[in-house]
Length: 188
Image 1 (tube, rainbow, N blue to C red):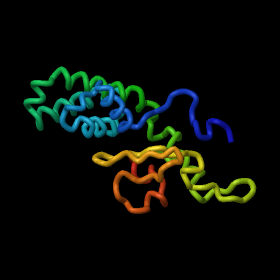
Image 2 (cartoon, rainbow, N blue to C red):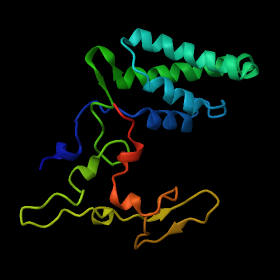
Image 3 (spheres, rainbow, N blue to C red):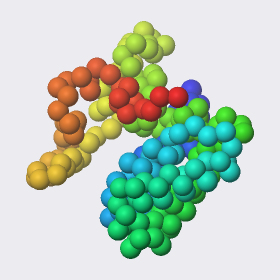
Image 4 (cartoon, rainbow, N blue to C red):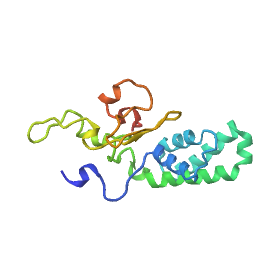
């Protein structure tokens, strides 16, 4: 194996819309107080566009129309904030989608991790074998020690010896059998 088997590119990493929007909302470059801004931003970023120019225009129109139709007072009172958020959404598009080359985060996923692409589970799926015939483990604790986990309205679970991962939504033990990207990955 080489470094790029897991760290799949030495240069441009294409980020999924959800990750990019979350990041810019955390930085307050996209105003998290705007109603449904994450939903509308991810939705307009996930649409297929034939050119960058059409995409940028369509993003602007769709977000503006959403607020005019559903939140007219927000559309008027927070016009500058909406415009700034649109600009940031357009920047996400410019960095992660290149329609003339048919290139985006969907076609070149970041394989570090496992949320939006199979990542680690390309090999750590319980179906691959080492040179000496042993199954390559599916157990996350082989490579990671989860020190803490916190859920809203619950006390933080913390241990230097490690804590057992708990899925944030009760889906039983199915998360142990399938990779995260099976549910979290947006289809091409």
